[in-house]
Amino acid sequence: MDDYNEYFLNQLFELLTEYGPIHEVWFDGAHPKRKGGQTYNYLAWKELIKALAPKAVIFGKEDIRWCGNEAGKTRDTEWNIIPYQEDPVK
Image (cartoon, rainbow, N blue to C red):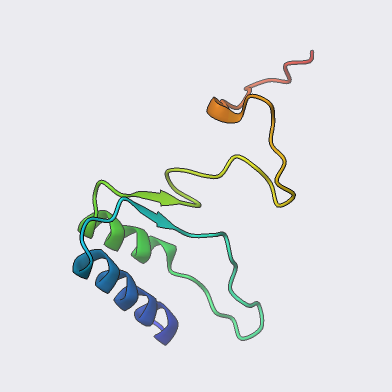
């Protein structure tokens, strides 16, 4: 485990054990800087969250996501999007 991911896991551990129940963990989609080759250990982060806060949802790549885009736009009926298996216009 590299220094960054070890530090991040320690932060998650503190947040999930020292401040009461946690219901949501939010990852905003930031990507590591490409220079320097840093990678995020999402699997280790997810495993720790599920172990320490099994009822918490993970925002980002896991349980929930936001409905809009960077411009604040969304579809009219964004409350329950289910992807089409085929093009619905055909």
